[in-house]
Amino acid sequence: MSAAVEFETLSLESAGEHVTIVRLNRPDASNALNTQMGKDLVRCFEDVALDPKSLRCIVLTGAGEKAFCAGGDLKERRGMTDEAWTRQHVIFERMVRALIDCPVPIIGAVNGAAYGGGCEIAGCCDFLYAAETARFALTEVTLGIMPGGGGTQTLPRAVGERRAKELILTGKPFTAAQAHGWGLAWFEQKRSASGEISFVEHMIMDDHSGDTRDSVAFSELHGSAIADVDGDGIPDFVVGKRFWSHLDDYYDPDPYGPAVLYWYKTVRNKKAPGGAEMVPQMIHNWSGAGSDVVAKDLNGDGAIDIVTATRSGTYIFWGRSGAAKNAR
Image (cartoon, rainbow, N blue to C red):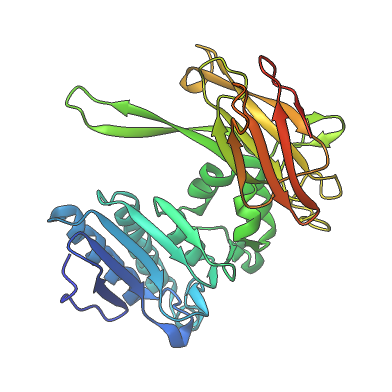
């Protein structure tokens, strides 16, 4: 893909020999998705599929700070006949396939609103990075229609079926911080006979409102670390729920519960996805976690210690050798 290629609704910028930035470039219309943008995205990403050259990564973002993409251009749609709308929808379907089938990884950089079709474009990306101002929503239901650009398929894969149903059937916006707290997954590496590497996602936690310990729900995780907590030679996950960060937020299954610090014990299980089962274990039901968690043998006794900092203080949990229990 060459930055010299011109599109009416896209701008391309080279960020080095192997990276191109593609911007949805209708800032005066909040980068709304119109017929021409659909055609431009089809042409742009199908060209990459046919000849990626030396391209190794595409960053897809929106021009300006207001919106990544505000969704379909309703001003254009109001003047359409049924036949014109049908032709436009075919273009949008082909656009979604071009994004999903792109052989080069796409990183979505979401700034501002990603509503309707904009949320669906974001959902086609391989990775998403969102600014604090980012807002996502599949708002089609508020217009009496359903998402038609793949959102009913990509959103459940990202946040789980139950959460996706809630978002699709209510049209309720959600933030990057909320989406961040909805899942924990690990990616199993696979190698083909030719040595090609691929990864398979295995969900550890979606909305574990039913997984509780000491009457505290394991949910809305924040800081995390990887360490062999129990000394069995298998890495475990240490995660935490931030101190009162989701008060009055009913996306959290336990919004009024105290912060909690816990770890997922990795247990080999041939019947589990990827051959491993993640079993939640409580560390402490009040300290919680900030943006960072450190899991390391600090005093050299052979046991993993855990450090976490929140607005209520900084805590060290000294690991007891041969046990998964910790003491502050």
